[in-house]
Amino acid sequence: MSDTLFDKGHKLRQAVLGPEVVDEFLRTSDDFSMPMQRLSTEYCWGAVWSRPSLSLQTRSMLNIAILVALNRPNVLKLHVKGALRNGCTREEIREVLLQAAVYCGIPASQEGFKAAHEVFAEADMDK
Image 1 (cartoon, rainbow, N blue to C red):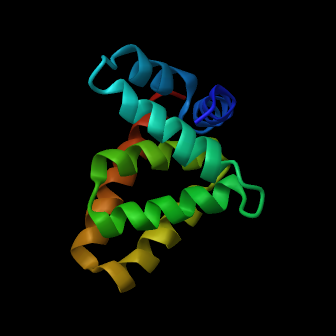
Image 2 (cartoon, helix red, strand yellow):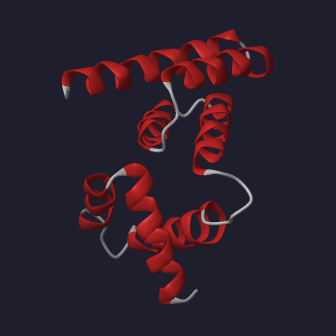
């Protein structure tokens, strides 16, 4: 893929997840892991997240639900932080987690609530 797609994805990824997070991902990547960072930046962020038909808030809420379904709490925390940066409210995030409980199961949603609560607590400490 082109550097243009990487640059576009990198800029959007920084806007959603925060430049400090993305820069740390890239800084700590080596010859083994950099191809995955490049794929994620170009494909996820440059080719998909940047499409105009869904808002960043909608994409964040979809990711939260999907990550609950996949039981990926570490990545879920990253995307809850991103959702807050995108302008999603805690109430919207709560509703997504409740919706996920119906379709993904109570235990998966409980893990999602735990992850979101940790992100909220961290955000409150930073205020």
